[in-house]
Amino acid sequence: MATPLRIVEVDKLKTACSTCSLHELCLPAGLSASELKSMDRMIDIRRTVKRGDYIFRAGTALHALYAIRTGFMKSCVLHEDGREQVAGFHMMGDLIGMDAIGSGQHLCDALALEDSEVCEIPLKSLELLSREIPSLQHHFHRIMSREIARDYGVMLLLGSMRAEERLAVFLLNLSQRFAARGYSSTEFHLRMTREEIGSYLGLKLETVSRTLSQFQAQGLVAVQNKHLRILKIDSLRELVGQHGCRV
Amino acid sequence: MATPLRIVEVDKLKTACSTCSLHELCLPAGLSASELKSMDRMIDIRRTVKRGDYIFRAGTALHALYAIRTGFMKSCVLHEDGREQVAGFHMMGDLIGMDAIGSGQHLCDALALEDSEVCEIPLKSLELLSREIPSLQHHFHRIMSREIARDYGVMLLLGSMRAEERLAVFLLNLSQRFAARGYSSTEFHLRMTREEIGSYLGLKLETVSRTLSQFQAQGLVAVQNKHLRILKIDSLRELVGQHGCRV
DNA sequence: CGCACTTTTGAACAGAATCAAGTTTTGTGG
DNA sequence: CCACAAAACTTGATTCTGTTCAAAAGTGCG
Image 1: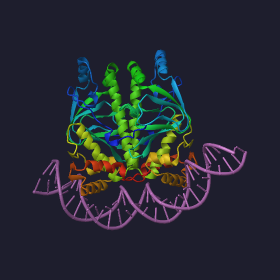
Image 2: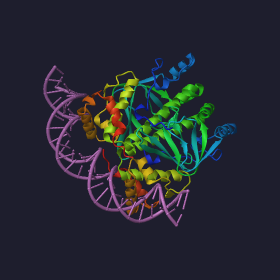
Image 3: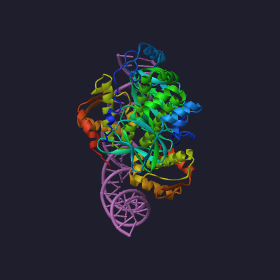
Image 4: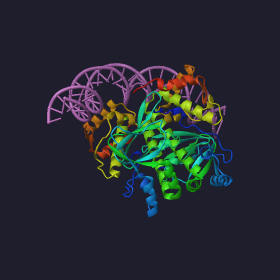
């Protein structure tokens, strides 16, 4: 029996690892003391990035993957003619830069939407250590796979959902990710502009604004600028998939 | 200087490996005889699938990855409410099933659009062998990364392109993939229906049909049923990114 | 404190979806 | 090999969602 993909749960995140402050990468359980030490050696380079700084840019060579310790960032895919689109928003515990392994060059820009801190993880070191620690190897594969799964969810969103649904999915996804990190699932700050939300969802900023206003009028959320409170999370969930079943 | 992503070249494919008949997976060069033998042992299970057969279904446990030896298939992401969307079309040399590593369950259906042959690659074996053969390990990472890069391209397409551009990108992409496999880049059979093309591109089948007719009227292509000939490939390329720069 | 950026909201417009009808192709069984 | 039914495709007319254009109000950063 085929279980349908639940978009809003695509990137469930496990608990954090206090030892190395990396989340996605720290999952492998049951590591020995020496293995943990190797992990720490591998990810010892920390970088602080200010709001607006690039972590990496499209076209530059891949030096390392980056695990986000704190902060919030976006990645943008660029098209030849100058069009760009937000490919994802990333927060504490996310690993970014994996798109560059294939060609050795980054295919997107990654920039900080607020002052942030990242850990550099040299790909060579990660691969080296992966060969010694099977659970790390498998874990890394799972992280890459989850990124693919997330992308499939976005493709579904962009390809077959109406504006209201897209925004609802977006809010539910943020909610769930904040919750997984120990923050409130119903009240949070939108670190990005309406335009960036629109870019991610394949909508214009006006549409995002209008739809948010509509949600507020319906009593689903309370928005004030970047501060958002989800009032009826179940109604939001119902909204996704109920309307616009254009099969 | 940031080099923008060229969608139509996202999944460039290298030459095939005659030894094991796997393409994406066979790239690592300079393997020793014993390493090649290990590779062959790992991928010794072949499966023939008839047109319409599923290779795997969403919700089922991940048993193996599948390398396509011959044939043509699609993968479909499913939404809770029954909506489904084509997430990709796959042909000789492609590796599918990587979305399932994260959760251990497939998130999409994969089914054959024509009689095909696939090689099963047990994930455990692949990870085991990867630890012994660094070039295989890196190569596998590159394959996963390329899938992520492809997804970013699709996101850009779905999020910011108009119908004509989407179809042009689609045709150029097919053209280039056929060319990379030694087939004609200008003349090929569309193995999928208009509806499946539409699903992949976030369009309705009528729009796909109309746009194809329009391309034909403009002398860009010659279509007859599933047979397609690209007449002005440069015009198609110009079409992408020229129009509809809605930044 | 002021200027630039962001957001909201309205009105007109455009592109693609929907609805609908007719045609062609394909696959199956006699 | 042909006949027939089902599936796939094309094309037209209409509708609707989201974009575009525009203007005003609000926010926040330096």
